[in-house]
Length: 238
Image 1 (cartoon, rainbow, N blue to C red):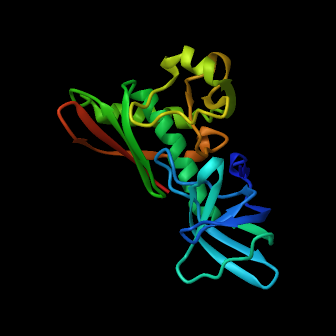
Image 2 (image 1 turned 45 degrees about the vertical axis):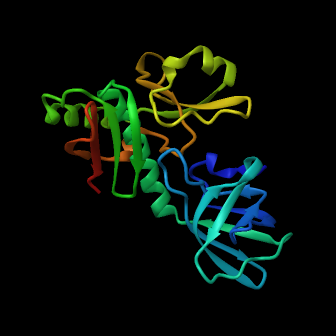
């Protein structure tokens, strides 16, 4: 199993030891700074340094038995098994993912409908909703979303057991993506505290520490993607 260093979302550099090479040409490490593709969030990129070499990381994916596999750019030489490496994160890309991901949590607050899908990018993100009719006032939703961002609410990690989550199914907003279960406990992302709490849901992705870091966003057009499915996109303004 790989130690998930990316849970400290602001960590930009960290050591690791190579524990194996995957059959597909990836690198398995004992501790990963790189978030592996999943839950609508792309895998991180960056590079590794070790004695006598450097490798560019194109992305990271989930491997077997809780491992994280680092996928090199084509033609890169892999460090040998047992090598001590230093991981360097493409921070600018990751941080934009963090901003978009947290903004999508807020979007699910201003549109309190079941989520059927989602995707995170560096410039924009989107959620698909079980939404029979389009919103009557998109400008009002955008204003409400930006008002939540401007409140600069704390974004906090919390944990519950798998059993507690099963007993509280209302915490799960997504219909298409199951919460990251199976390890005995589930990570929750809480936005706001006490009487100021506005959202609490299972999530394995990376987020900013406060909503104010997202900055202003704008909503794109509402696209119909099925009889009752509508896609709502948001874009970072800077």
